[in-house]
Amino acid sequence: MIDDNRETRMGVSRLRWQWLKVATLYAAGVLLGYRFVQQVWQTDDAVQWFGLATAVMIAQMGILWWVLPYNHRRRETRPRVTLGYGNGLTLTRGLGLCLLAGFLFAPHPTGLLAWAPAVLYTLDRLIDYVDGYVARVTKNETKLGEILDMEFDGLGILIAILLGIQYGKLPAWYLILGFSRQLFVLGMWLRRRRGVPVLDLPPSDYRRLVAGFQTGFMTVMLWPVLTPEITLLASYLFAIPLTYSFGRDWLVISTVIDADSPRYLRARAAVKRVLAGWLPLAARLVAVVLALILFAHRESAVPLWVVTPVALLLLFGVVGRVAALAMFGLAAVDILSGGLRWFDNGLLLVCSIIVIHLGSGRFALWQPEERLIRLKLGATEPEPP
View 1 (cartoon, rainbow, N blue to C red):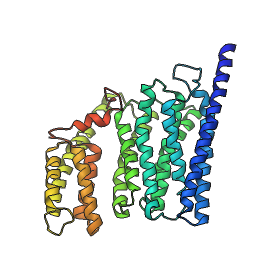
View 2: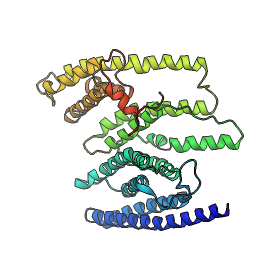
View 3: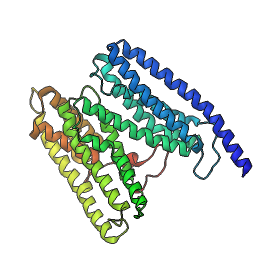
View 4: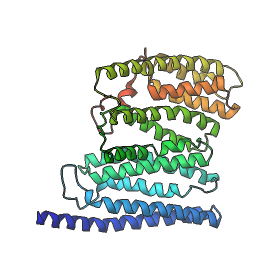
């Protein structure tokens, strides 16, 4: 036991030297970002950017220092002496979030700098997709990596939502969703403190899908090409599944719902038949009719020969989510060129988002994307539905 404690202390001591290297790289990255922003913004705005980026950097380095002893696998206690490539990618995400946080409460960037928040958060999402896979293939999955991943995910979506509200692209109430995970964890802690039962969540790939679609929307929402009239409409549709997911999970862990009871399973199957079967089918049909009518006019921003193959794929449910994503883009182009009209391009946008979220539904001919989106990178089997 003494030898184990001594080796643990030595391992953490070596990790603290690596912490110092990471902190140095973070500081250098923030300074380089400040020099770039300083060339575009006024001095006061650039100093504010530097202050916010530095504050987030200090918070992240504090979290990293605290979790260094957890740099071990689940069934081990002795920390590994290197952070590994997977954690290195996660920490790269953290640096990007420091730079992203600097844009909070600052003037809306213009020119090339206007793309910086979108690019930074897009890179964050792309790296998040591969860092866990890299940790698995290098056999360096650690509890430290899990904690950092969760903390950076929560921080990233909170910063993205604040920027969306700041730029007028999200309603103010969306901030509640930004704190949804923290509120959920707080609720669990309060129940345990009161001695009230807290159940484990059943495995579900739906939870991960909803989170993925939400962060995907946050990424696209920050792109300068999308106007508030598009993102504000879309925000309501992307908020519904996330609210439902957290609401159902809360009812399960608070013992209001027995996730294994036959009554619940029958009700869940009935709801799934409607939401995953018939509703997407109706959305596909309405979207196809709307698209053909909307883009048949010569003055339309998108020629009919571009719309027709997308409409056919959507109609027959062939890679339906992909076709719906393309239809979303066509509807957005029409809104950008001629303004939002609720009962044609607005409704087309709504129907496209429904299929993107729920899939192609009934009578779909080919849905290879369904398996792909449920697979973690490098996994061979999807998680339970």
